[in-house]
Image (cartoon, rainbow, N blue to C red):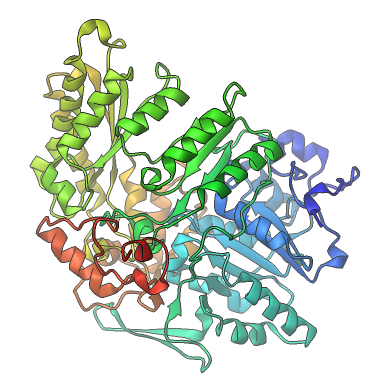
Length: 631
C-alpha cells in the first residue's frame, strides 16, 4: 500500500495549541502533515519508530539519510516511522514551563510512547541537543535509569563511529549504512515483544546482529596516564569487534522517490540525487572518505528515473547531485546532459556541488547557472604544494590556477577558496602561502583582456581549523590550543594585506573555540560524556549555532568534572595507543592508516583508488571501485 496517498485527517489534534503556535518562531516546524509525510493507524502496526535529527527542523529536513530511513521503514506494514527535531530555544522554554512532552510530527503523540527513538549523529556539537531530546521527552538521560516502557534509544550516523562520549545515554548504536540490518533488528524486536521479553532480552539478541553495538555490554580499563589499557565485552554474547554495515550494490537499494516536502524553506530545499557513496581521493584529514569506502556508484538509468519521479512528487524546482566528490562519478556527463535536456524550459535548476573545476564542469555550470550571480568554489585546503602533499589533496598549483583561469574566461569573476589551518607539520610559510595562492588566482583574472572581463574579481578565502577525526591517518595528530589557532589566522590575515591585489581579496576564519570542543568529543572516551551532561545542565544547547554557543559554560563544565582538554587535544598519540573506537571494524585497517600518517610526515602522496589500489582493506566488501580496479 502507498501510505503517502492516504488522506490526511482534517481534525488531527496538534500537540501545541494556537496560543503557543502564535507565540513561537516558525510554527510550521512543529505541525507536521507535510506533503508526502506518512500517516498510518497506530493500532495496526507492531512497532512505532520516531526518527530524530537533533537540530532545528530546517537542518534536519535537509538530511538525505533521514529521508532514506523514513521511506525504508515505512515500507514495512508493521512499522510506522515518524519524525522529530529539536525544538528551537523559544519553544524549548515553553515546553519546560508548561510541561509539554516532546512529540512526533506525524501523530503529534509523545515520543515517550514509541518503541524506538532513533537519533542520527552528524556532528559532535549536536551532543547537548541529544540530551535536550531525551529530557523534553520525559526520559532519564542515562540508559540504565530509564523505565521498561521507555523507547529504546538507538544512535547512528558518522559520529556513531566513535560512540563512546555518548555511550551512557544510548541503549544501542547502529554502525554503518542503515539499509542493511534494520529489518533484521526490527524483526528481532517484534519476536521478543510477542514472546513477552524484556529490554535486556532484546539487547542480548540485538548485540549478536552484525553492526549493532550495545555499550552497556562493554567496559573500559585505563592506565595511570589516562590512556586506555583495555576495552572488552562484559557480556558473553557481545562480540569483541563490531563490523560496519555496507550496501555493496547501490542499484537496487531503497531510495525515497517521494520525499517529505516541508512547508517552510529549509537549508536544502531541493530534490537530492545521491549519485554515489564513498570517495576515491584519500584526503588524510577526511573522515567520510575513509568511513564510506569503497566508492560505489548508482546506476545512471535509475538516477534518471528517480529525478523524474522526485520532481513530480515534490514540486521542487531544483535538483542537486550529491556525493563526496561528484566529479568522480563515471556517468556524470551522461546524467547531467540528460537533466539539462529533459528539463529544458521547465524552470528546473541543476545544482552541482563537490565538482573539481575542469573544462567539463565549467561547461556544464555555464549552462545551468547565472554566471553573473554565482560564484565558484575551490577547496585547496592548503596554500603550499608541500602542505597539499601532506594531506594527500591531489591538487597541484597548476590545477588550481588553470581551473580558475578557465572559469574567468568563461565569465565568472567570483571565487570562494576553503582552507584548513593547524594541519600537521604546518609552518609559517605554509600559512602565508594561502594569501599568495589567493593573489595568484586574482592575477590570473587580470591577465584576461580588460574588454573580456566581467567587472572586478572577488576572491574570498575562508579557513577552518584542523580537527583530527577517528579512522583517518590524522587520528594520531595533536590539535592546537584556541590561542594558537587564532595566532595562525592572524599570520594569514597579515599576509593578505601584503598582496598585490589585496583590494580583490577577502579573508575570514571560523570559530576556534568550537573547533577545540569538537576535537575533544571527536576522539573522546566515556569520561567525556560526563562533561557533555554537565554542560547541558549548565544551559548549553545548540552549540553549533554561533548565537547560542557559550564557551564559558563549556569551560566551567570541564572544570566541574575535572576533565583536562589538553589530554584529548594537545598531545600526539603513540603508534600503539588503544583508541576508544578501535573495537569498530570499518574495513580500512589501522595499519593502513598508520602508514598514511607516516607518509604524511614525509609529504608523500598516495594515488587515488582508480589510479592504483593502496591496499587499505576496503576490498573486503568485494564491491564498488575495489572490484573495478581489478578489471
